[in-house]
Image 1 (cartoon, one colour):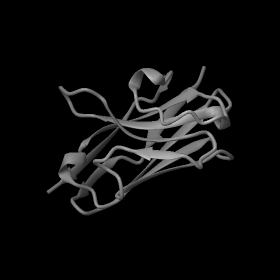
Image 2: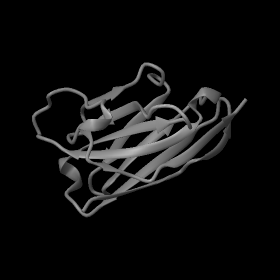
Image 3: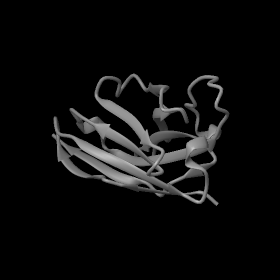
Image 4: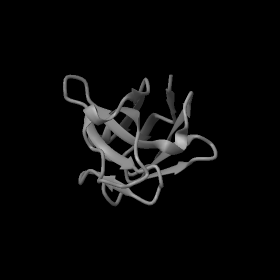
Length: 128
């Protein structure tokens, strides 16, 4: 059973930065595509970013492109999410997700249903 544990959330002022981490255990991390999603209470969980198992392929939602960066360290079984120039509208619970995928890249995984494993979430609050 794969377990994902997020950390690094918190309260930050607009324009500030945070780095989220997601540590995976119970599987072969290098075979996973990893994603970050976020959810505001009462709204649907939305895609934010994804990284292919090879780490060379990343994809972002338009709302965060140029501000957020997803990366991974397969030796540490961890995916990172550097968030810069944060805005109040980035406030949400951020979730890490994983799915075993082929080494052959077929495109970014942006849908919730494409992921099998989820973390418990970490709160990010951006004050204005």
